[in-house]
Amino acid sequence: MSLNIGFVSTRFAGTDGVSLESAKWAEILWESKHVSHWYAGQLDRNPGVSMLVPEAYFKHEENEWINARIWGVTRRDPEVSKRIRRMSEFLKGTLYDFVARFQIDLLILENALTIPMHIPLGMAITEFLAETGHPAIAHHHDFSWERIRFSINAVSDYLELAFPPRLPYLAHTVINQAAQEQLSWRRGVTSVLTPNVIDFKNPPPPPDDYAADVRAELGFSQEDIIMLQPTRIVPRKGIEHAIKLVESMNDPRCKLVISHEAGDEGFEYINMLRELAHESNVDMRVVADRVSDLRGLDAEGRKIYTLWDLYPHADFVTYPSIYEGFGNALLEAIYFKKPVLINRYDIFARDIEPKGFRFPMMEGYVTRKLAKEVHRILKDNAYRQEMVDENYKIAEHFFSYEVLRRKLNAIINNLI
Image (cartoon, helix red, strand yellow):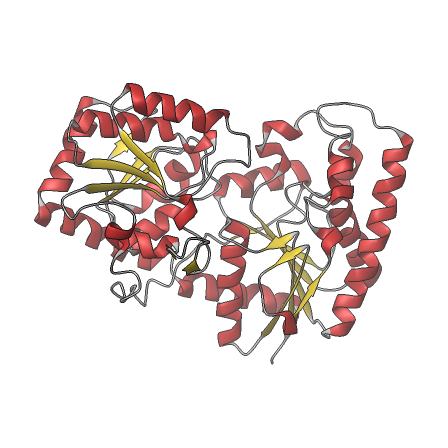
């Protein structure tokens, strides 16, 4: 039976985890003839199957006004409560419109009932589901209790009610074991573990003509060793460890290349990294101005590449994160058969490492032994190839589309 699926979130645009994983879910659902539709405050999906509601975006001015008054404090003004309810009522009405317009059979709620960046939207979704009994799947990525900035707040009543809610026709999915355990303990809710996935059955094609000149366009020679940090510049990515690793290589050919920009959490961190790289004599380059979600040209007529255009040209990938909900960039590096430096963050140690992957790993700091291992990986072609081939086979078994397809089919069959 073909279904109309309605994806709901604050944003479906760009390369954040929610946008990427929701697109993969839609691709897998399409194989079963299910048609996906999109509801969000920021969208880069097909307008013909989408409903753009600017007020649903977490950076909408009204929502930012609310957020400025509910986090870091323990009491809220009556006016704040009034404006939360007013915005929630409006958004609930748009959800009714969305479901009616596209005849939605099943809703998939992407992190909108998980991380409380948009309290009114979470409340609107919860009330809509309570009023309609509409079948839905909540795809959880980041819970409020996983983020320190949400620990002191004036909305504990709303968090208890809607982040996430307990409703009869709402199935819950999580991306790691720790989240599954915490959700059960804190909310008494069972969930299905649906890890992030990549289509490992279909390896990436070699670089096409457009991406063939990445090194030259970004100012690197063929002799340069590109150490790619494929993340945003935020403190939890632990990029200072990547700088330390490159410094320990003691090879001027090694360049630390960071793909994405800073800004989400301020600019103090990037300024610190620049100072550290300068003091460590490390050639660190942020190429965010040449990397985007889509190919194109910038204002100066220069090529804009995607992150996936960069991976084939990388010699090594650094991923020294302190915390990750799962680790999309790690799967991507495995997909492109690149060796990866891993800092053993909690989710990696519990959900990924036991599968048997081979990575050079650190325990919070770079050691001489680790640097020696990275040296060997870069110089010994046979050793490196054996490592990346083995990692690919393991990932194909545990983190492929086939794994997610089986789980989604079972959840949908139970709901519909």
